[in-house]
Image (cartoon, rainbow, N blue to C red; front, side):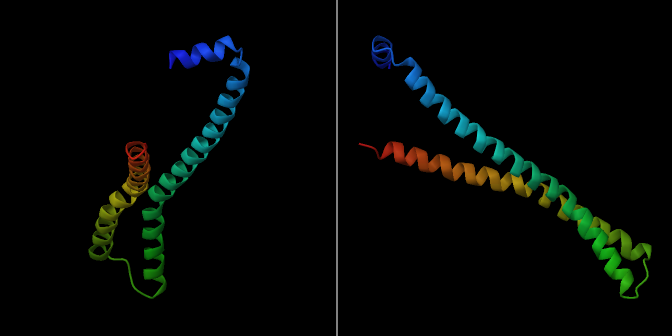
Length: 114
């Protein structure tokens, strides 16, 4: 690696490689920003989804002519409390699985290289 750096310095190619490196970094930052924004949107949506589902369930239950009694309301809230936990960890779990597959592909490509 030091020989390559010395070769670049001797030939005065610093600016050329610096420009190439900055292009790659700009592309990487763009994709990282896009990834983080999509993860934030997914997490926000998964935090709100159980609340919307619970509200829609209550509205539909009342609109169909049923009454909201405590013996009906509290078990429904408990059930959605359990569902909420799993919906909240779903985006992070999917992200971890996708990143793991990418890492495995990279390691495999490295190990199978000549």
